[in-house]
Image (tube, rainbow, N blue to C red; front, side, top):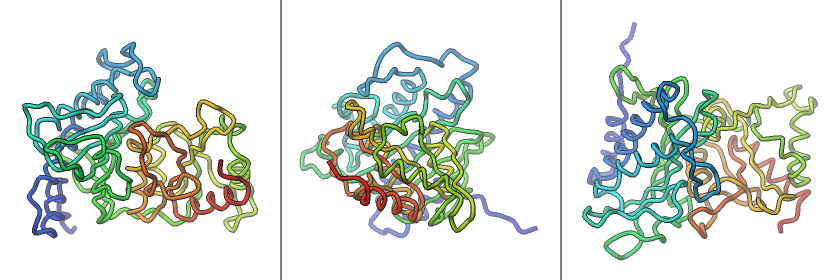
Length: 341
């Protein structure tokens, strides 16, 4: 039996760094800081049923959502892992109203970090997979410390993005624009090991993921598209399978590996959510970066998510993401049946 080399995430990142002679190691250190935070969060998620960290803190975040205790723990873990390293100049989190500045006693670096600390955390009581989503940009401001402009950059300018999914196993998936790679955490040695090199998502899948309780709030084009997915006169001779977990990271991860499309349209009949629900900086843009570098695609229904110019830290957008041909088909249905407001 041939021996299979064990490649840790640190070794993999350093191998990629060697392709850039000008690299200083700072970027590698930043990704390793995020991986370390993921290990700590994974430890707490995996024992969530054993200790008193489930449930709500009683506070509400900037999105108007009740903050779960694990959300709070994950958020503080990421901040504490990054704010003192000298690698980032500013941060932002779905859980914080404003940008997170680096404390004045610590040096600032040349990168930004934006994150959703614990996506899908409301499902933890039901033992549903949850995850951390992260996005990294280069600093563009001229001052010695970062400002909000460093965070409000289009997704296509990301230098890295990815997620850590906490499920039956803990897995970190990331891209720096040179392939998408997945690493599974071996808890016995505390290392992320390369398990899914060069992930490629199929051009078309047979699965769709959507919260169909919102069906009557969707536009005509979206409703017609979903109705079409349920028909059996497709080339395959059978309808698409409906698979909706309710945790964005989990739904996206499955479709990334096996093909399919996740859709969370705007609720055109709900004046509170006319522009969509998901956050551009913390959810849509980083996952779009991963999808595109795996051969997939992400759109707001009209244009690539990665081309959207952020206007605010907590901007929301519709999201259609997954296999290239599936998402392109959604855009066609919207173009045929809906007028852009």
